[in-house]
Length: 121
Image 1 (cartoon, rainbow, N blue to C red):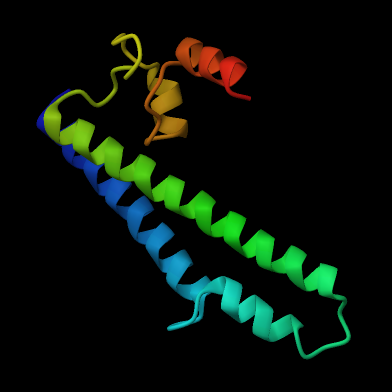
Image 2 (tube, rainbow, N blue to C red):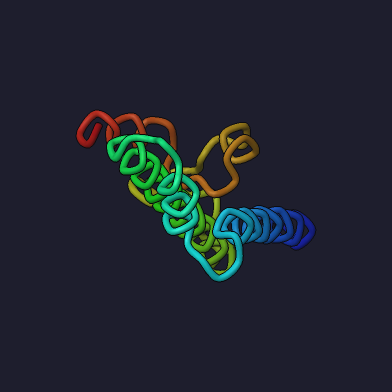
C-alpha cells in the first residue's frame, strides 16, 4: 500500500471516528447519558414501567454498539500505523479490497469472519 492510499484510508477512518463520536455526543444530549435522557423522557408520561425499562435497555444497547464501532475504528487505525492494515487478524491473508471499501474498519477476511460468526453467533 503506497503513502497516498494510506493517507486516504487514514482520513476515511478518522472521519468515521469523528462521526461516531458526534453521534454519541448528540444522543447523549450533552451532560446526560442517553439512558438518563430516555428515563427522563418516558418516566413522567403515562408509559408503563416495562416500556420505560425497554427504552432504557435500547439506549444502553445502542451505546454499547457505538462503543464497539469506535473500538473497531481505533483498531483499524492502529493496524494502519503498524503496516498491517488490510491483512486478516486471524489468518494473516489479505482482505479483499471490495470488503475493505465497504467496511474500512474490518479486521478479518470473509472466511475467518464467517467462521467467527458461526462459533459465536
